[in-house]
Length: 221
Image 1 (cartoon, helix red, strand yellow):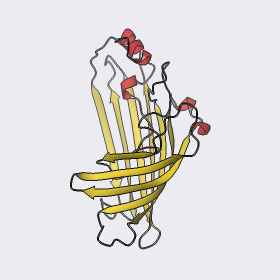
Image 2: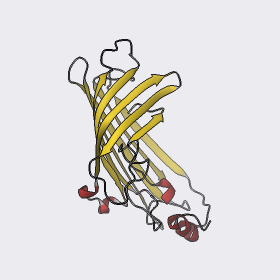
Image 3: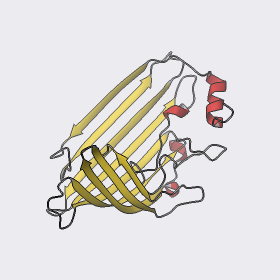
Image 4: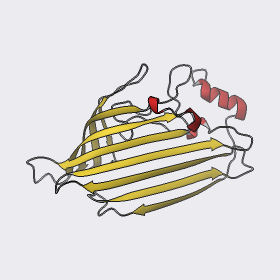
């Protein structure tokens, strides 16, 4: 389509609109949390890798890792931190990660206060296209709802988010990291966990898309 991003049209021009590839993947996780829901101590580490095998029509690899830690500050307050890193690249005859495998940053699961998936590189029309290198760090102080002992399925938090996505690791610049602070809430509703946040960017730049109130269904952190 003529309305498609130039990144998509360039990819199709170079590689057609279909290809055959065989993927290999592996992952590892180590969980020391005291409980899966509303943990108060311990941590969770994950690493995963995938690669198209040599000889595939499209050859690339991706590596992602995340580390969560929970530290009790008092009987009611818990410090939660999370670091997400991701990187990918092409190999063989292909020199970059395909656009549809790019990482994205921004939003309630990433850097809150910015619209979902809008941080990082953009195409010639100003539309976000993601990148091959992702860095996101979240820190929260989690606490129960004050004066509501019966609200055991609800947790509130204050947070600091830092992150962005880059074209590749060579283009990483700490000065391009975006920061935000705000308040968050998690409700274990009958429909599943619902997360809401009220985020305020600290260093938004020209072209950034701000969205202060955000919510999502089906995520814990």
